[in-house]
Length: 119
Length: 110
Image (cartoon, one colour):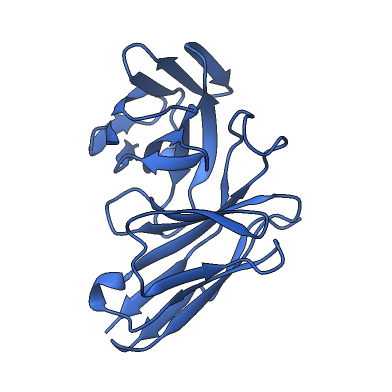
């Protein structure tokens, strides 16, 4: 397994355009997370999937953001009507939880991220 | 709310030992994580503490005191390649999502 992969690595778009990012998690991982990271800050949680179900969304995830994980494998994050404030690194991470809720944390493995620049 | 504090920058000399502190106040706690992040790269997992005490992993050790809301990452025998941002993160919630500090930028000097 090659780890978490994200595509594209870089995206430059004009304000108002829609963009979509893809994340392929580690294949046996049932949990998938999206985070956003701006320069000089730590990653901020956006949303979480357990298998194909989107179970949690941060208040940072405005109506212009939507995420899917249709078959419990890869995930997409779409941003509609992009704004300059959306410029950031979008990170995907995956992890494994055996019992679906009560188990201890296992480490999340991060992808290389998609760097979005809105001009 | 969630609040995680760590120093913004630290500098140390190659071969030395450095301790990076982290204090946290979070609602819910599933564990304390340390990640390393080189510029432009993904965060990579270094250590995880869920119980009080010290976890040692080669040149890296991490300590946790849950009652004090305090952790530290200890790096021994520093190498130039250890120059990076070190992120303290607390796992919480049913999603086990991570809340990160802003990171400590460590510069290792020759």
